[in-house]
Image (tube, rainbow, N blue to C red):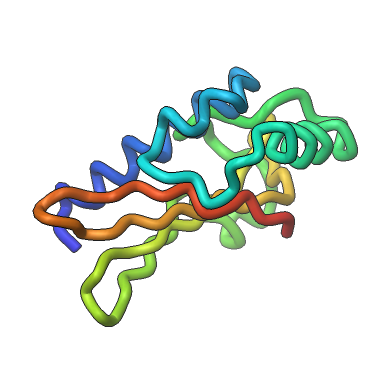
Length: 127
């Protein structure tokens, strides 16, 4: 994976995290080319429900410093997984709120297609 592709993926991640931070869940599809989880009401229920159950206000934007210990459990970076067949890569990002882990993992997929990068929102997975 090139540095340019990594930077493109991080930009998509930043856009999604901004939408989540603003609680504009209906705008998530505008951040990607395809949504695997495309029921806006289900997304809202899962994401907002997780925030409420854990007494959290909102998700952090990309780059907000973490303030939990031990920090070795979280490097505050996206984890990239290149596909062995060279078709693209996946990205996992542990969501935080107030610098604390929020119990959800944002999962994205990026596929190489005709010189472009297809951006796919896979899931927000409870941890």
